[in-house]
Image (cartoon, rainbow, N blue to C red; front, top):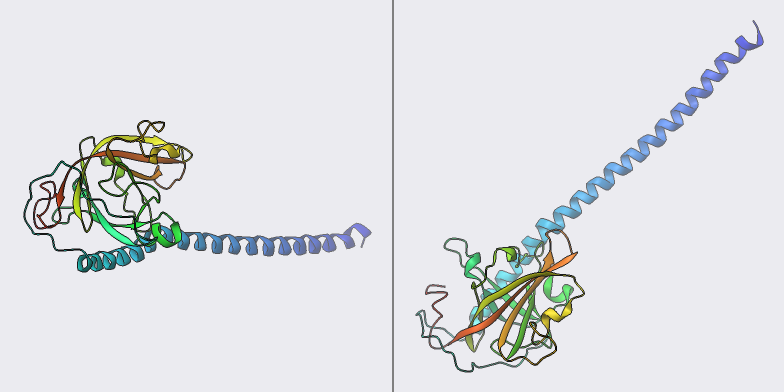
Length: 253
């Protein structure tokens, strides 16, 4: 037998060994990728579904608690008031003090309403309590800008349908003092750095406010934080809580 003939089986054995190690490495990498994919899928499910479940349950509890804390409001349509409305002092951080009603977002017999809490910290307000009120902005009915923030995707997504709002739509804020009816005046898409949208006078930040306004802010587009969708409105009327409810909501709310 020649030397070449004796070497041939050894080369084949080495190839088989190298192939075996390579296959093992590929197998390990494949398993790691599958595991990473499963973990990513679980994270997405948690972020987009389970956070909605948890936040929805908590916000329902907050709404029920608010029902027991707010003064009774007769189930009748009351005459709108246009003179200066009552204005409450800003509450402590993470205190739930009112609701936002948006008729445009009503689902059949289920009127849309979400609780409003003080502050915009994600961990203590936006991720758990729903809509947050920017500190140092006006309170409902006050001259200035009553500015709110809320998630558009995940954690209850209170502002999910924000892009459906149209000029003239009603934004009704409910507090212990009154029902405040704002009308949408403009919508816009801005960069996250454009913070003057929550200025006291968002239409002209360099001047003092002369009207009571409202601003909704949320991320845009869906599944992204690249931009912010902004809705501005102005106070058109209000109803004392002990007189009834605004016509924009009707009765039975």
